Image (tube, rainbow, N blue to C red):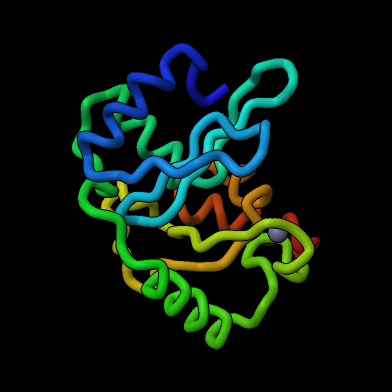
Length: 159
Ligand SMILES: [Zn+2]
C-alpha cells in the first residue's frame, strides 16, 4: 500500500500545485495518472483496494507529499520527445535487456529508472539511468546502489 485511496484527491491537488498535469486514466485499475517534469506516473489499485505505483517517480512524489520535502519533479512536464530520446540513448548504450533481471525489456512494462534516487541526490543525467522492468524496479525500491547491484546479481543468478 503506497497511499490510502482517500488521500488521492489531496495528493492530486498537491501534484497540480507542483506543476504536474493530470491525465485521463486508461483502465479501471488506475486511480491516478499524471505527467510531471520527470515523466509519467500512475497509481494503481487492485480488486482488494491495495494501491501500487508504476515507478519510483510516483513513490518519490508521495514521499515528498507526506513529508513536505521539496519535490524534484516540481515544474512543468517535459516534452515527451525528451524522454524517448534518453530511452533511445539507453537502448544504444545497454541493449534492450532489463538492467535487473537481464531478460528482454519488451516482455513486460518497463521504464527509465535512476540508480541513485533523485531524492538521495542522484543526477538526472544518463550515467545515473538504466532501463528496467517496472516489476523488477519495484523489488529494488529505495535500496542503496550497492544493494541494487546485489539484487541484480541475484536476479541474474550470478551469486
Ligand atoms: Zn526485469
